[in-house]
Length: 123
Image (cartoon, rainbow, N blue to C red; front, side, top):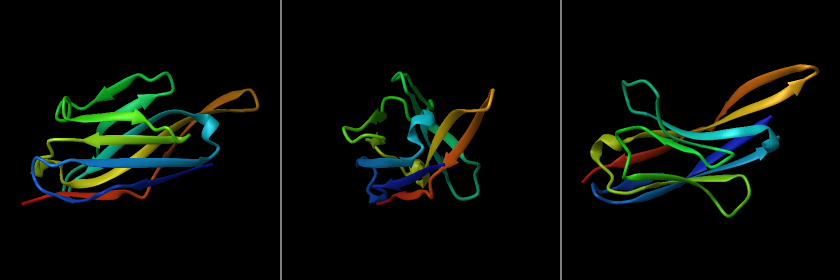
């Protein structure tokens, strides 16, 4: 199993910045990609950014140029640097880990989620 713990959320004014962190523990060798997702009230959960084990990144159009996903110096940590925050960025932000592992001769995939951290952008 993999455990994910997010931190760094909070209240910030429009135009401000926040840095979210996701710390993974457990069977971390199974992780092949980590992503940040968000869910605003009354809306579906949506992709924000992902990073693979090879360092490839992907961003939602709405955050390109403002958010940066990266691997931290601490092992098994992924950060989301959020700059130029907008009111529309207000949501609960979740960390997600995609894992692959062999079960006998079968390659299996499983997804783990963190508990989420609230980001509120308001003046």
